[in-house]
Image (cartoon, rainbow, N blue to C red):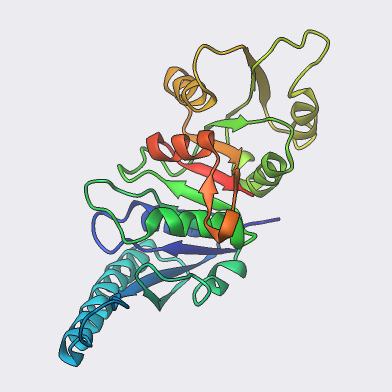
Length: 276
């Protein structure tokens, strides 16, 4: 499916790497880009001995809206310079509260672009928002590292492949991006030797039928965990994007990433396109 509609979550501060990447994607694919700025409402403790002063709550609300509008204004200037099609929205969210009131924004788009949480300037609920969008929106998510990217046109793409439905969805969602890549590597990490199998061969055949230049690399019985194996491979081979499935579960509706997924997103230095 072609990418014609992109939604990006705008950072409340900093150089806006996700917004810049989304706008460049929009320009390249002639797609409409919607930016969503979130105004985080203050939490009123249920155990407070006395009601919170109305003036305090009003001031906190105005501060949250002001921060969202400031980020919105910065995005609109970036959008003007890019010359693409775009619009802006602001959504209110109670800090620490549920995402039901805003999740609908993410379900009617082709791709969500969102920045990795910056430990030096953390966004409220950013990690939980990423998890929720990945598992609840039904839309692929492109994570952008907080340090920014060297290019917005990936030429050396790594596909983390295990044959799962989530990995397959990520591949299908990335086809338009893969078509512009000069090199595509299907990486299979096997924890045990399987001499009678050809892991990744079916995917390579499928992508070759789309006229894509594909190679398969298999790492068997790695000496490190899957996340470290993938990240070390990226470092050694100068990949500029990872395509992979996102894994997790939600006991009691608290979303928890699978170990490898979380570790990659915490340590990623290049964009990661994920689907669930």
